Image (cartoon, rainbow, N blue to C red):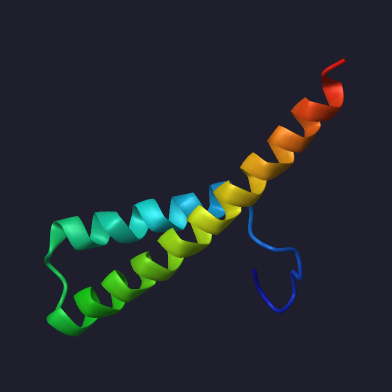
Amino acid sequence: MTAADPRPESFEDILAKLEKTVGQLAEGTAPLDELVSAHEQAGRLLAEAQERLAALKLKAEALSAQLRP
């Protein structure tokens, strides 16, 4: 999300950023301070992805319950 775009990021956007960050960590070629920052970012992105996934699961369960006779 940017200041010009007030929409929250989608789950897919967060997951893509997480995958990119984990890829940077896996390479291990960046300076140590950048690796630490990437690790911190990965932790934040993972937490956000887990929160979004839990919220999406609740919505899916509620919709499923509405469709049951």
